[in-house]
Length: 184
Image (cartoon, rainbow, N blue to C red; front, top):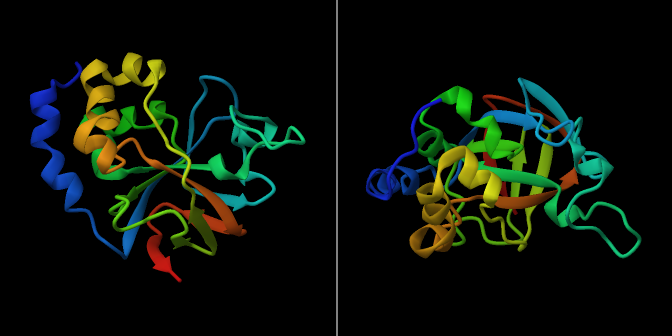
């Protein structure tokens, strides 16, 4: 496992992250979390309103639920900028511990993908929600305190570098390499 990057090293990569495509991005990785602490990378996956990213523990219950106790759809799909995780993780094999479902090479800043924006990926459509996605103690453990501060404060928070949440509005299949397009 690589050593954690310093804040100076992380800030040096910000321009590349912010240069991500505004549209016509690319799905770079799909990860499911079958159980606590477990990660499995997939080449392709079904996603649905009922199941989220199929095989992911979200459908079994998560940190946010509806009044009737079901997993909340506003935190159904965790999405992170692929350039950001590439910088923080340093090695491709170290992306999945972040715990996000989809890693996308696309500008996920609020100016480009505000809540309500719909992203078509493969045959599915995901709508961005307004629920904040923040780094936690596990993120610190995996990538270092500087990485967590980098994504959670200042420009990192402004640009939503830790990522965003989405809910499925059209069931479908997503595959690594799929184009990610904004749809209205």
